[in-house]
Length: 116
Length: 109
Image 1 (spheres, rainbow over the protein chains, first blue to last red):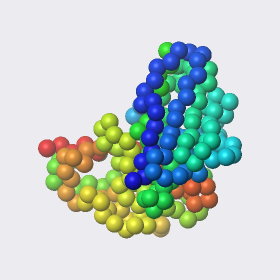
Image 2 (image 1 turned 30 degrees about the vertical axis):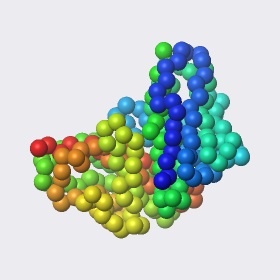
Image 3 (image 1 turned 120 degrees about the vertical axis):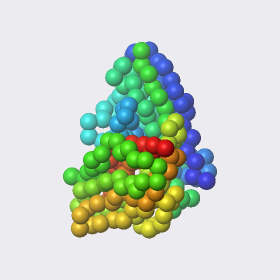
Image 4 (image 1 turned 30 degrees about the horizontal axis):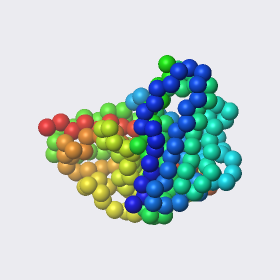
């Protein structure tokens, strides 16, 4: 139980285009999901908290207009990287708290974004 | 400000040797600490949390509030323990999980 599915697992896009990443909780409802960014051989940096039915809260230094987050249902949060640039290339990971694991956090498998 | 520090980027030990991965934290609230593990090409998964006070795969960790530490220990390392280990702090006010920089454990045969 407590599975978070992330799609796509990898994507290549051209500079200037937008890319949408989906994060789904498969067997539980998640009112809150979290989006992280991980650079190679580095730790996970929290980007934003996605709240179902309301606006996401972004961490300091994260551009909300570039990283659009939508949490339209209790099982789906999306992260859209708008007007992508090569420096946006990274590994993006979503996470959710699940009652199935004592409200611990479960993570998606991540999405590797490459902007060319 | 809240912070999680893992001073070692790489820890290399031989099979059967004891292992201690260090983690120190800074947080003004009531801390809840976790250890997560990431095996090669796999997603991050929970190893243990301090409130459970359990041992998973032979690993244990004790929260020391006086030293603000939550070091991960295992008496006899196995090759399959080789992975990336992250210490994480849950901020009780916002439920945000803050990660340390991670320590790569390499267990040599």
